[in-house]
Image 1 (tube, rainbow, N blue to C red):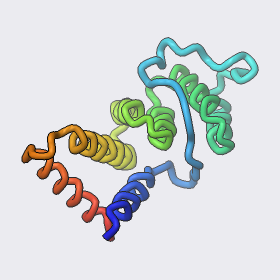
Image 2: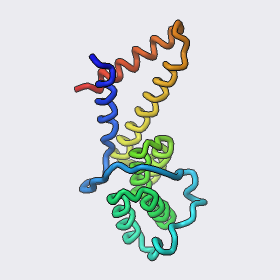
Image 3: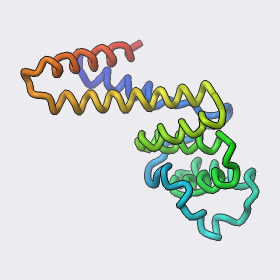
Image 4: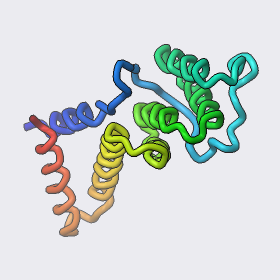
Length: 168
């Protein structure tokens, strides 16, 4: 079997992060970090016309849906500042980061969401991100380990098992 096919199947499975019911979002693409939430200035005055959380949440979803990832991120960060106890903007920010491949930031955002609300969908997405991080670390380890190192063979077998498990 072509070794690329199981990997593609796993990536497809991992790309299926949960979103809130009724919300379908396209795949995002760039920027920023969860760690800078407190120090990130709010979006420009043109984009920050309201301090109403519902208005900002709607704008964030519109920006996300139209592929303006940096704008969506700014709105989610603004929403986090306005509603610090709300898990939803952290969840959405985690989805944004995960779909961009910013897995460490996604993991942090999902953990922040879980601190505010224990939620199965958030745990699901956190688990998917952690699997992606783990597979990436194992693939990198396999590349770096010397060919005669028994750990390299063990790593290869583990990756193969993971990829086979991902196949239906």
